[in-house]
Image 1 (cartoon, helix red, strand yellow):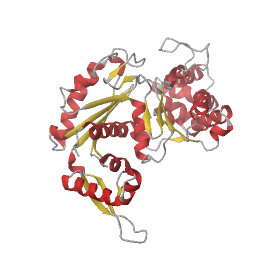
Image 2: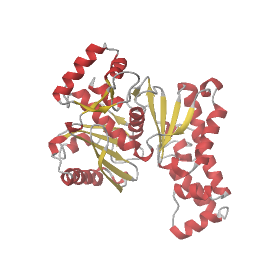
Image 3: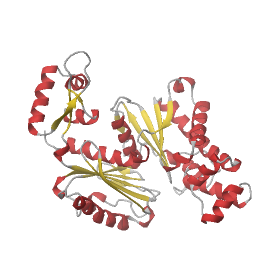
Image 4: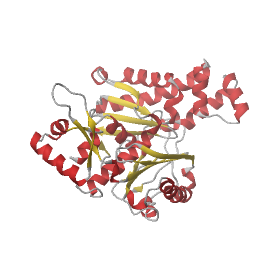
Length: 387
């Protein structure tokens, strides 16, 4: 019941009874016990639907705190959260995962105690820690497995290293899996079959099936960045040619934009390259929105290639929603439009009849919130929060 209340974001007893398929009397008895133990809290009256106004139940914010950590290819984001996933404090900085685990783990060992101290929170109040990483993860042991974007991290135990920082349990998963968990929580599990696509330095997919995150037999489900879209395409960092990641992720978009700038096809990008010394994916989006034809072509090409892969997934899986996220998703509406067009052109009519391809509901906080969801869910399941 405690876990159902967490996923609901706070709800009335009768809604919990319907969700759990319990009788009203059983639900009331269980709720009374959890309230008495201090695990649940009453958070105010809801609107009346014709009778007595029901009381909202939520997970007690005084149970402790969570840490959510989103390790990106080029960034480190850290959040201190309450059990209802409201953010108490947040810290973000540039980082480079290709430098190996040493520098990033050192920053976490410094930042986490500092954030607790700044808010007067004892280390013992940490219930759990959720960490997202941009690579395949063996979830059972909390280790990365041959991550193409993270040389030097293979078989490194983040969990063991974190024992120097906190006695709380630590859980590690692929970053886009956590985005999917965050989306599932935001939707209160009302959408049960969907995909979350993260487009950044790499491209990955989080899969939710029947309301549960699907990791596959060994934890590598959703590693779509290495699906081939052109057998004669450029060499990918995984060792194969023509992967969609090598042709449509941020580095590929930047490479296409730089070529357009250097050959004179895009005066707009050429000026930006001259001013900044280098281009970023967001610059390509800005040029596209300013009407630059070469930038438009780059954005459309990347969107079409990603849509080509997604069309195969839509035909195979038949999700109700595909949520697009990651840093590259912010380059502009033409990018999303190109993805949608490619999906619709290449997918079966029945697969797309009720399909919605749209931005993720959590925006740039999807990874952090998802890490918090993982931390809270596992704390509820492994006994860190006893009921």
